[in-house]
Every structure is written in C-alpha cells, then in structure tokens.
Amino acid sequence: MEAMWAALALSLKVAGWATAIDLVFGVAVGFLLARGRFPGRDLIETTLALPMVLPPTVLGYYLLVMIGRRSEFGAWLHGQFGIDLVFTWQAAVIAASIVAFPLVFKPARAAFEAVDPQLEQAARVLGISEPAIFFRVTLPLAWRGILAGLLLAFARALGEFGATLMVAGSIPGKTQTLSVAVYEAVQAGQDHVADSLVLVTSAVSIAVLLSAGRLGAGQSGY
Image (tube, rainbow, N blue to C red):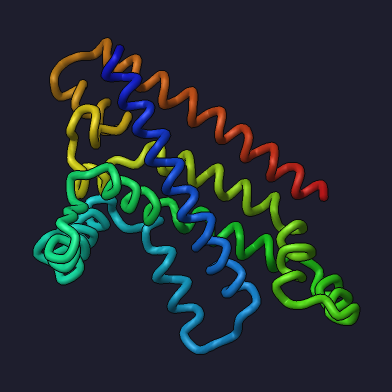
C-alpha cells in the first residue's frame, strides 16, 4: 500500500507539472496558430501533433537522443551543472508534457478561433492594448475549451507509460509512476497489487474525463 500511494503521489506530481508546462506553451502555440498566417504553419502544427500518433517508445528514444548524457544538451547540463535528466522524475515530466501537448494546443487553437473577432476589434477601438485584449477579452471567452484540453492532458500525462519508462525508468519512490508500477506488478505476478493500482488509476481518469466532458458541454451551450 505504501508503494501504491508513493506511485500515485509521484504520478500526480508528474502530471501536474506536465500540465502546467503544457498550459503555458500550449496556449501560446494555440493562439499563434489561430491568429497567425505564415509560411510553414501547417508543417509546424503537424510536427507538434506527432505525439498523438507516434509510438511512445519512439518518443522515448527521441528524448534519450535529445537529453541523454551523450547528447550535446545532456553533456552540457552534466558538464556545467552536474545534472543528469535521464532516470529522474524531471525526465518523466518532460516525457509526459510532450505526449500530452497536442491535447492542449489543439483545443486551445479551436477555442481561440471560436472567439468573435468583432469583440476584439471593439476593444481595439476603445484603445485597449493587445496584451490587455488577450487577457481581458480573448482568454476569458476561450477558457472553457482550454481548460477541457488541460484536463485531458492531465489524464494523458497521468497514464503515460512508454516514453516515461524509457527516459525515467522504474525506480520505486523516485521515478515509478502508477502506469509503470502496474507493469512491474504484472511482471512480478502480483495481481492484487496490479488490481489496486488499476482501480486507482481508472477512478482518477474517469473523474477527469467527466469534468472535461461537462466543460465541453458547457462550451457548446455557450
């Protein structure tokens, strides 16, 4: 039981940080794609959506190449600060945030595109600055769609397995998330432990999906 609660706490920690990261970058990218018209826009969107279709192990391999000690970035981190990202909970956050990122920027883009441009234009006529228009007009009108995407991203990050296992491993109490703990329990023949972990994971995921569904229904009604 102690190991189960430790895995749950770590999973919530990883999913929370991953969702926070996706909130910042997902909203920014969603707004840029919704409002911007520039060469390569479709290619950028397609590239950012790849985590939705690529196998998690492929994403994990890409991450190992990018942040492993043999990579330029990983070698620089180790040489300058003595930091090794691989096999840490921070690596699990990076993996979860990348896998869940499309679930944030795509709903954010759709939510921003649904905002009536005339309302933003009216704010400009009143002399309101562009940052103020975004935070006082655009974002409040798009928040339901963004929040629904964030909830889905949180659920996806909570259940991330393949990429997390490759870059963070399965160190109990340090990098072993719920999904990885389920895999380890099954491999060890500990069916009762696996049953408990699955029930906890399913309950949390169902609660998040129900919340996202209600937000989506509210957005449609709006």
